[in-house]
Image (tube, rainbow, N blue to C red; front, side):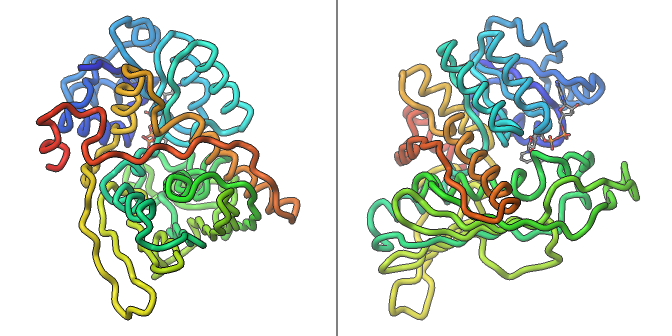
Length: 370
Ligand SMILES: NC(=O)c1ccc[n+]([C@@H]2O[C@H](COP(=O)([O-])OP(=O)(O)OC[C@H]3O[C@@H](n4cnc5c(N)ncnc54)[C@H](O)[C@@H]3O)[C@@H](O)[C@H]2O)c1
């Protein structure tokens, strides 16, 4: 089994360590964090070795290193991982700036190493069932899409919420990757965007018990709308907000010439997947046809490791994440300049996941369905 390391042992590291333990697709051999106390606590919780950063980077038995630091540290840490000779798999977004994203992509290419990036929810049971439905023509020809992330902000529950209100986060960069990656996986790359952006508050107040009442400066837009034009001809509307007290809008819907498909929350791995056929007054629930309906953070990394072994492209790629980052940047730039802007990157649409993903060996599928 491949061994991997983790840099950054904050909130989300528990989900990766739990999925690694339960899914057994790779082994987390060592972890590190600038905050040694936090790293030690995680190491103890999951029975994993805790190392200093240079010792982790120098381990020769690691197939890849996972970067779970906050967005502002993503580029620097991923570059360190690549320069140490390891495949890098980063939490989203790939980097804060497009320049840093390009540097990472160039470094990985130069060294013949893999660069992967979350989210990998688009490889889960729900979104891959939607992918199969669309690819098989169940909704006819896709024409348009809507996607809505309508929230009131993470400061009520997150223990370290300040980074969510800095450039490189906000609702667009924090939650947009789930929605935009799902849309690009389903409909292909985006070629033009038009954006509008506002912020409701200049300060927010932390609610987690460890920071109760702390003031957080808001340095990025917190309600963003984007009009998306896909290269294949469809149009989309995406709204990402931390300014919404409550909403009844769906997560994602794709409108085809013969049916609408209701796409599950792209920040989850499961369903439900529903369609409403033209002329029908009711929604039908589709059977889920792919594995990984539970929280399976790390399957993008399992895919990367398996693809590297086979010499095949991996799906949660740096190119895909770089495209999503470009869509988000162009959206905010468009909001500033007041006109639509072209998106230049053109990643390959990731291959659809077969019913038994390539990274599973015979007999492992039952574990994936558990
Ligand atoms: N928390 C969530 O629910 C969630 C969900 C999905 C994705 N993410 C993403 O995961 C990443 C981490 O989020 P989080 O919520 O775990 O944040 P966090 O602040 O809880 O943890 C980040 C950790 O990284 C460490 N760190 C920062 N810079 C470092 C460096 N240079 N070297 C080593 N360690 C460093 C910090 O000390 C901290 O322990 C972010 O990119 C976020 O967007 C978070």
